[in-house]
Length: 150
Image (cartoon, rainbow, N blue to C red):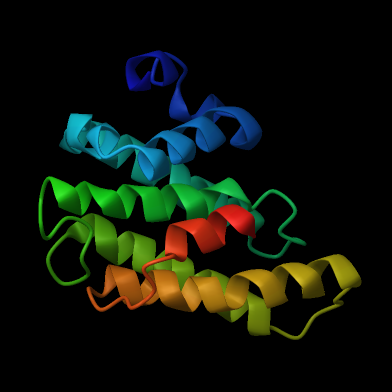
């Protein structure tokens, strides 16, 4: 399935299609993260970073699957113990910066509306939990489920 997804260039992915499919695969299967090599992980991280950066300054209406994909990528630790851990993996540093930028954006004073406020209320605690996971000290065993339901 990943080979099929990767036939389309990552910058051309649609968040409701390819990003959602990749997130779903990684979150539901123990074999999916085992099938990914470093090049595939780098491509998926690039997509996560793109989607996080794309939403900063917006109402976060297209944010559903990027955090879910990031959490799914953390399951690569089933294969490589220190994968995507800040201080041990450069990709984790980039993901951490993206999460911190999003948390900062949720706190910025700007012309806020109800859509933004709902998104910030829903995602801000989950972003802190993702950051904890990236730091290697997460404590929510249901984080994937929480992201899926958000």
